[in-house]
Image (cartoon, rainbow, N blue to C red; front, side, top):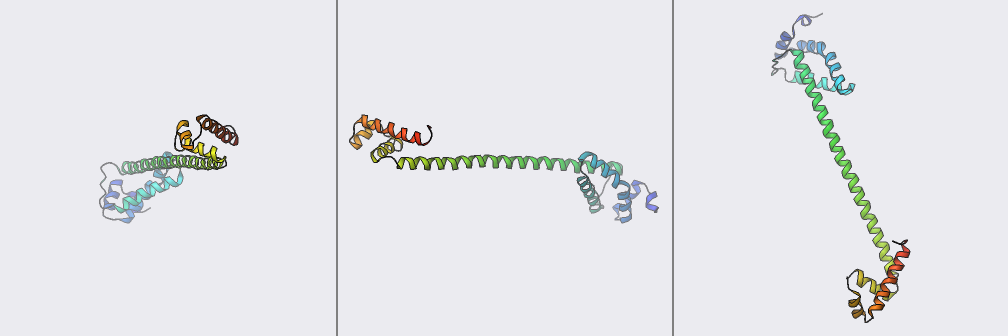
Length: 183
């Protein structure tokens, strides 16, 4: 057993502040296992617990000259581990929220994209059926549905009776409905 094993936490902290690597090693040996158990109980993940404790000790060594412990060393270490664990939970929650938001966006965009594709396909099919109508019937249908003319206006433009225009529209709609299964 080295002399460092007989030193108090307070004495080890003082030596650590001066850059004593053996003091750091003694602190690590005293608290590593206890902090791992503590972190594991909170996180329920061995690898995450190891990472948290490793980060704590790395931070302590990196900042050993500025280290100011106002409580006990053990209290200080447990508090740092707890803060790291809480940060881990925050990042997980943020990550989960971020992933959920992206998934929602993907789902929404996929639905919207699917709808637009189907709409374009349906429009193309209807246009094809309209193009297949007899010439006068197609002309009446297009004036009504695309230029929004009334039967009277169509009749005047094409020099037909309003009754003929109405009949042509009914027949065009019937043909289209039959081809699309009674829409």
